[in-house]
Amino acid sequence: EPEVTQTPSHQVTQMGQEVILRCVPISNHLYFYWYRQILGQKVEFLVSFYNNEISEKSEIFDDQFSVERPDGSNFTLKIRSTKLEDSAMYFCAGRKGQETQYFGPGTRLLVL
Amino acid sequence: GNSVTQMEGPVTLSEEAFLTINCTYTATGYPSLFWYVQYPGEGLQLLLKATKADDKGSNKGFEATYRKETTSFHLEKGSVQVSDSAVYFCALRSNDGGATNKLIFGTGTLLAVQP
Image 1 (cartoon, rainbow over the protein chains, first blue to last red):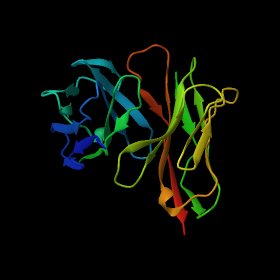
Image 2 (cartoon, rainbow over the protein chains, first blue to last red):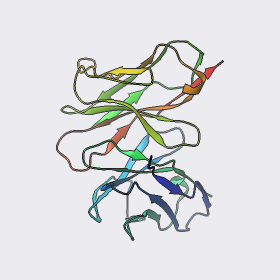
Image 3 (cartoon, chains in turn orange, red):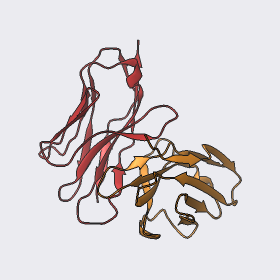
């Protein structure tokens, strides 16, 4: 059964550094999402992406964040200058049509 | 705005015990409701869903009924197994016509089942 993959599984970075989190969605999915979960808090929506553009973003998704689907398979989340409060588990998800969202295993980001 | 509240964990049970994890929601209109499960080291997996009032979602012995009058979607299982140990997330998807279909999650409840 196809599944969503994410790399790396863990990332440690210094405050102010750029990070890129990578996701490979299921190949026939059309809508893509990033969510994050700060330890002990709710899973929060960050951004949705369809037809090569952002369709909705939350207030968390400020100018330090960007998303890209550069080659039709990878879906990336970039944080330009990480802050301590960006430490979280980041989940990628995708769906086809009106169906269920399928999630990846997550990337745990730690900003020191 | 839309929100989901679920009971805090951890919930620790003995094998074959009855499980209830409470979930209530606040939403305008008629959202769809979901339970996702996350096993250690894995992603969020859809466990069950219900798309309208009084619908019952079920899977792997788990059940949840969409109760509009109490705005609840409590997860139940009659006899838990050690393999059910995981984090369970309640979520809603607003069906207000928006194109994104984003999910709004609760905080997750850790279930630990002891043999």
